Image (tube, rainbow, N blue to C red):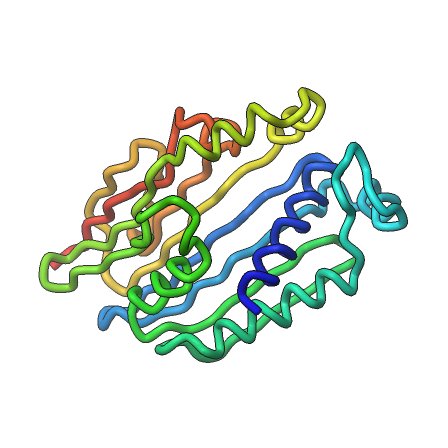
Length: 223
């Protein structure tokens, strides 16, 4: 079931490759006790006119175009997996086929519950980088881990030149909100909100793929 969900997620990316500009948004609301909410959004609204036409085709430039049924199946499988993950609750989804904006969110008891989700997704994929998030309340810091995988860069260079161009307008954004005030961040591209309650980081997808920038960030909170 989980493998099939991963297949449909790949189809999501194929839509993006064919259509052009897209944005991925990762949002986390972290409570003092380590529980919280995570939401991931795939926003392709900038290309919605082109996408509406592409969805009528079977494939473009060798990329299979998923149908609405394929996308619905992806959400069904993803939610099934989340429901089976310990510490995960309040699972929600939104599907906007008019603007091509899709979200998936859930509550977690601790960041370790979120790490389990990612661990299952990348199991047997040639990596041991299972830890995506960590939180130490006694040391007052939250950390977003990230390790650049050479496989991602190699896969990018295997794409046709016209397919690579779509990443020029793509981005990956992280927004983290806290109950405590933020004191400092380690990622020089990250910005602390004026009220000190959130951190914003936006990286263009091409820089992320090529390893020129990354989303790793240690966020120090006030005691």
